[in-house]
Image 1: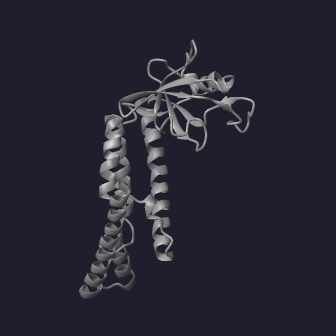
Image 2 (image 1 turned 90 degrees about the vertical axis):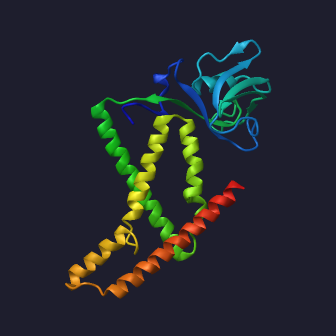
Image 3 (image 1 turned 90 degrees about the horizontal axis):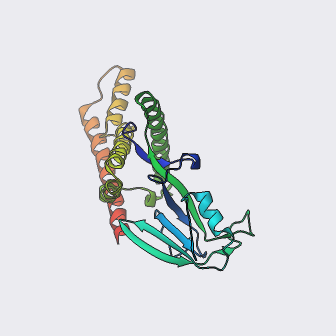
Length: 250
C-alpha cells in the first residue's frame, strides 16, 4: 500500500498546486466558521474582494485572513463530491497566540499522496504495524478493564454494523484507503483472537499452558463449560456493541 501511495499530512515545503489539498481537521464552536464549514472538507478556493488565495497551505490561508477582520471572505470547499461556497467574516481574538490577527476558528492540514520506495515501505510498514498493534492492544485492555470496573465507554467501540459505514467512507477516499482500513481491521482481529478468553485461540493457548504445567489434560467437561461461558460472554459483548452501532445510526 505504501509503495502505491497513501493520503497523509505533508510539510508545506512539499506543497504541490496540482495534487496537494488543504483539509479542515476541526471547527471550533462559537467562532465564525462554526456551522459554515464541516470538518474533513477540502478548501478549493478562498477569495475576498478581488483577491484570491494563491497557495492553498495552512500558513497562506492564515495570512490571507489575518488583516481581514470584519470583512466578507468567500470560501469554496468540497466534501462528499459536493462543492459549496460560503461567506465567512473573520474576527480578531480567534487565535489565542495572536489576538491581533483575524481568523475563523478552524484547524487545517496539508494533505497529499505519500509514496515510498520498496525498502522505505518495508521499514515504514513494519513501524506502522507495530505502533498500530500497540495502540489496539492498549485500547482493548482499557475496554475490558472498564467492563470489569463498570466504566467502559462503548461509544468508542464499533462492531460489524458500524464497520460497514467506515468501509464506505474508506472506499470513497480511494482503493488504497480501503486497503489501509482492511489492514487495520486485520490487526484488530489478530489481537482480539489472541486474548486469553475461552472460545478464542488465546483462550486455547491458556488451556495448553495449564496442561503443560499440570502435565495432564484438562477434563473435557470443564473445558467445554469454560468455552461455552466464554462464547456467551463474547456474544453478549457483540449484542451490546451492535445495539450501540444501531443507536448511533439514528
